[in-house]
Image (cartoon, rainbow, N blue to C red; front, top):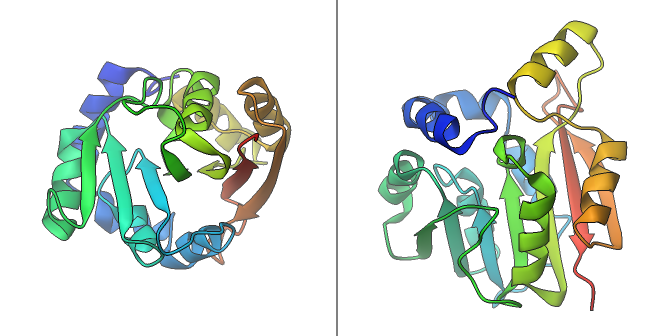
Length: 205
């Protein structure tokens, strides 16, 4: 897949960062963000990590639920946009890092969130296992990814460009990553209500 390579992804996001906040509202809206956040049980003092935080769109929404928010991304160009909106050190703690090798100790976060990132992970199962590792037992991991299109033309484009997946593939990835309990919800804007697939997984006790 064209973008599921770390070097290509960094270059891709270097240029995407210039227009991301203008393009994003047509694909990943504030309403979708709220709908996804409502699937979680975030307490005001919960420690939450946004994996693949990018320009901070989801991070802003998480900040409405808790003040203890952390963001990680491999692209400095994307995070620079987040820093402009949120500051570099406060109220969010930002880190540069790789989803497949998260720079945190086991059982660190109450909730691990990732939206618009899994489609670029070369090894999604390894990254999902990392999210499970750093989440506290009994915590939650939420991942938003692009739902596999029903149109055959779009399917070919999806297969060539990045990871798109349906519920069956999501089941496989989450099970292989060590999760036992999870559920999927499709969501999207009114003109494409199933464009995204959101999985909420419980971290095994």
